[in-house]
Length: 216
Ligand code: AMP
Image 1 (cartoon, rainbow, N blue to C red):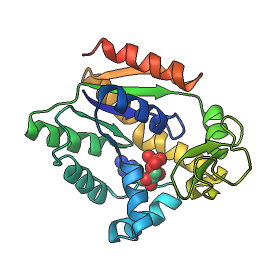
Image 2: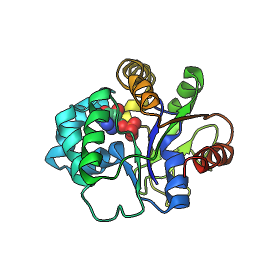
Image 3: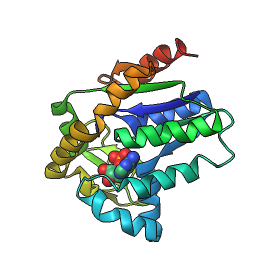
Image 4: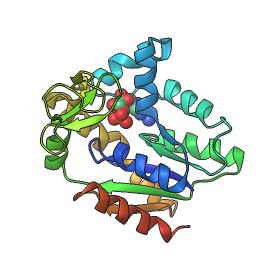
C-alpha cells in the first residue's frame, strides 16, 4: 500500500497515520516529524527549517523535496509507505510522481481527511506534546492527570510554536492557498478518497480502512 494522507493541519493526519501504518505494516513518513527530529538534534537541515516552521510557513521545496527523495530510497519500503504532510503543494506532488515513476512504484491512493476550520482551531490550540517522549495530549479531549506533565514518562508538556492561535490561522490560510490544490490534482489522477475526519479516533480509522479496502 503506497498511500498519501492529505488534510488541513489538525485533521488528525499524524494520529491516523500511526494506526494505518501499523494496520498495513508500512512505514509512516512524516515530513513534519523529520524536520522536528532534525531541529531537536540541531542539524543544519533542522536549523534551516526552523524559522519556516515556527511561523507556519512551508519549508522551501528544494529542501523538502530532497529530504523526501532521500527517504524514499531507503530499503524499508517493500510493503509500501504512508506519507503524512507531503506533498503540500502541486510542485511537490509532481516531484513525488516523478520519484515514484522512476522507481515504478506509483501511489495506490490519496486519503483526504476532511474537517471544518472551527474544529481544527479547538483541536490544535489544546494540543500539548511531551518534550521527552513525544506523546501528544489534549487539554480537553485527552487530558494528562496533572497539567504540564506527561503521564507516560513524566516529561514536560509544551505547546508547539505553530499551535499558537495566530499561527494556526496562518497555517490554515497556507493550506487553502498552497495545499488544497493538490486535492484536485489527485482527483484528476483518479487517486483521491475523501472521508469525514470528525468523531472518535477509532471511528475515523475504521472509516479510512473501509474506504481503502476498496482500493486494494
Ligand atoms: P506538520 O507536522 O506536518 O504539521 O508540519 C510542521 C511544519 O513542517 C509545517 O508547518 C511546515 O513548516 C513544515 N513542513 C512539513 N511538511 C512540509 C512540506 N511537505 N513542505 C514544506 N514544509 C513542510
